[in-house]
Length: 551
Ligand SMILES: Cc1cc2nc3c(=O)[nH]c(=O)nc-3n(C[C@H](O)[C@H](O)[C@H](O)COP(=O)(O)OP(=O)(O)OC[C@H]3O[C@@H](n4cnc5c(N)ncnc54)[C@H](O)[C@@H]3O)c2cc1C
Image (tube, rainbow, N blue to C red; front, side, top):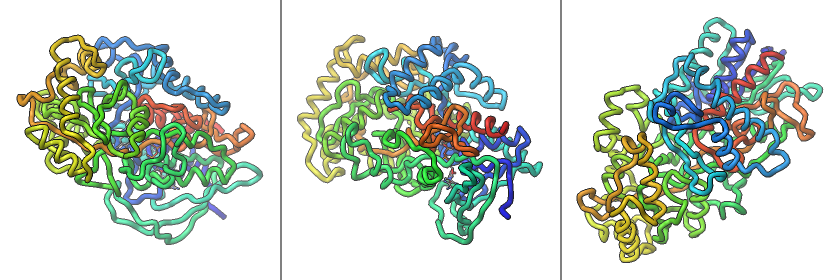
């Protein structure tokens, strides 16, 4: 007979860890199944930048950011644009999350030892109207210790339960079927994968060495999204909203983000919704030192770099760095090509770029105050950015614009960029830097950003001419589409119970984290506000774990 547990958690990423920690605290005998090896937990969260969407925090108030639950909800709803009948639960989860983010979230995490970099970041500014998409204020709280700093408290709690014998970890165990008895899910069957000695994040083998079957009162699916399987991403790509799927993309997530459990959940009766909603970035660059296959890194840029499409036309408002991810994606793909270009000064590269990923921010990840201040304040280029300038295949550094454009054409393998046209567009923008006011919407945004003290000191350069040699040499960066986040998935209620096609909970089955579109089956709606993915793992993992523990 299959070994029996109170609960089985499929996937040892952040959502799974949070749920398992809650189940363990409630005294539930819990099994965590993880397809990867090496005793590593944390999934994507380990590699993440650790940014969290929180509202009206002491960090914000110290910087004179007046945030509120109402403003955050306005921003969320303006971004989500829920418009489908089955968006009822996603909307309720979103409302519940905003209440959590404006309420208990920070104190709950703080009590577990988590802390945040005191300068709150301003992600996804939107750039349209007050009731439209985007964050009205900075609310991206960078966790001290980045991704590993978020994983650590939950891993600690889980490992305590492992030490006491309550929780069992089984690595290289890949779930491939949910077992049902009388319409309720009562267990999990799957493959035992061959051992592996690859380092964390690298692609491991999928050789099958055996099989398993375990039973449980509750099964929680926390297996992540689809961003690592580009064929699957293309299959569900929303051509009607974004244009044809890109032919070429880089992977912003490890290989294990394969989305398999979504189909497996469907086969067990789960309602799968909003699969056509997804969140990918336009500012991807190929990693010169890749960890996973086709590894791309996202540049989180402040608003100053000029952005050109593949044909050399400057992107119009509001498609500026840090404004509107999916709008810019649509705009870039409208050229029929998959890449676009940043052109900027070395001064901007030094101050305005953060590379997404814990391994790209060793000063923050290592909680090294001195290194952070040295790297981020002194006008010096952070070492990870410098490494890309030196070694990244998408980076071009030249003393004059003619040479820069020639090198850009050579890199793209065409002659799509015209030096005179690009020079004219840059000179026009440069003339507008003479005043603190401007008709150039991007420069208006730069001035606005610098009214926020955090951006002024740490992120946004004083407006200057791109062609001013004092700020040189010039930098051009070829930007790829980078796959990352899944906005739809398994339909659930606020407690994480998985719903069937009839809208009723399926007995014994829960889902949380990215596999459930952050909870509900897509609590972001059509657009994400950033920091809301880790946030969703914390919230939906906690809800699912607590509710399952009571059953
Ligand atoms: C570089 C990077 C930077 C990011 N930065 C941020 C940020 O700053 N803020 C933010 O909010 N979000 C960020 N994100 C997104 C965020 O990290 C993820 O959305 C989140 O961690 C997803 O967690 P999860 O637990 O739902 O899934 P995952 O982390 O994908 O974990 C799922 C786990 O399940 C396992 N699994 C899958 N299928 C099976 C199976 N069949 N059987 C057994 N095990 C299985 C996988 O191996 C994996 O370990 C970032 C992501 C990346 C990659």
